[in-house]
Image 1 (tube, each protein chain N blue to C red):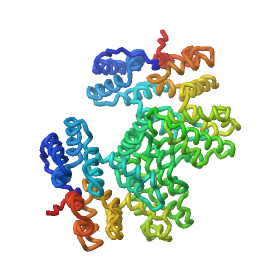
Image 2: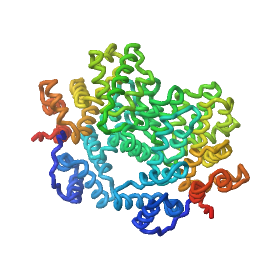
Image 3: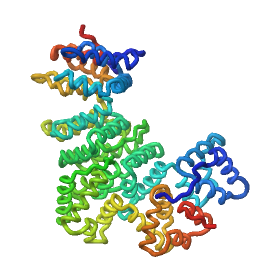
Image 4: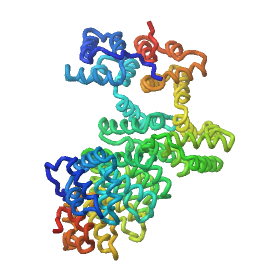
Length: 316
Length: 316
């Protein structure tokens, strides 16, 4: 389901590190070389390169990249080169500190990562920012959003496949009742969404659909201008159909006047090693244009080349 | 700060496992041998014995102990032999499923373990019960308690020593204001108690004391019959003076008509490798009788011998 192409047997990390060092030398960086190397290594291989780079030059590769590169290209290479848990910490930090009701990045991180990945991100957050993600989320959000977001990011959901059908039926009823009452931030509503396992929630939403005749997300569309309802729909979509959620983020980012580079970079760098292939298929099905083509139209230069490399599609 | 005495160089784990197997043979178990071995091994050593026992006899030592032993002695040996994270999972499970407003076991586990230990307990919970601690706490608690307990057990607090004094002053004011308004379950009140690091909370409570002239726990005593206020005081005591908290649990357990064996066993088995020495000193200071003597008066037989071994004091 990943798109990024990397050699099974990559060059020794020290060789890659030396090549990168060379790419930084002279007047301006050799972006092509940087793309050729970092755009074609998986997380493990990048980590080894970063370690080798530090051993050889006593400088963090991430810092060196930030010094050499600029703008969207830099941001993309920077996020990509980070360890996934560090990348999530960086994204969550920005999302927490600049939180607005319509911003779903915290929901995305809490609901599309595995429980273990989410925990690793919270650990990296401690290391980077010397406080917890919970503290920052609690301090920068309020009201119903805080109730929802705080438990979403703090829960360590069970990750097993077991499903309790009796529970699914009972909780589908609770969700339906609260929606009928428009009591969307009721403790029970939030409790179910934030603590149940992915498998259990899927069973509950299926049960909801069977018993009440609509998908739960349809029933949460009663007021499409309401940001809080949109947040609830994002939670449910991220838990059940992440590729559809990400397709929409990409579609809105690309269709926006002036492209939302931040969203584009975020989705490509975080999903290239996970499910970007499924997202690409979803995108093609929904927009009748391959994602690579849409991105190539909207971007240019090394930035374009790098994103296309992560998409598994070489630009030359 | 630990009390349990163990040989730096213990016998090979397989030898201990064989001895234990022998102790289980024949008519009734050889409790003395069980105490001599398990009562004098640290967590690492017990883990190795359990592994060796399983390799040799294809049976979990824990199961074998439960089969051979009975009553309070069994419960104590069982809890002690578990890995600390498993023990916390077992204790939290029971506390969540039988939760009552006056029961502080969940608070104790959430606030006296390190953030990492708490997380390990939550992982063990997944393995043992095929669901998350959050789910069970959310399903068995309600109202203000749920708000408090859910975030207490789900938070992964920052564990570093850094303190932000500006923040401590601001948050001491918030706490004071909410206490003055008797708004003890206000989101801000709960947010501060459940997400801030231990170091930061200590600074905040000190600041509270300096600025308002009373310890915060004194101001939370306005109504000593109120279980929710008692829960808040337990949170604060566990975060700031765990040895005082545990001294009180032991005192109440021992002074109770008929001894609260469950609380006694819990505190001794969970603290013997952590801070039971400090708790013993606190106990002596408060009750003018050594903890070992008080426990020996209230217990008997192998059960007494085992608890005294964990307290570092042999009964014969």
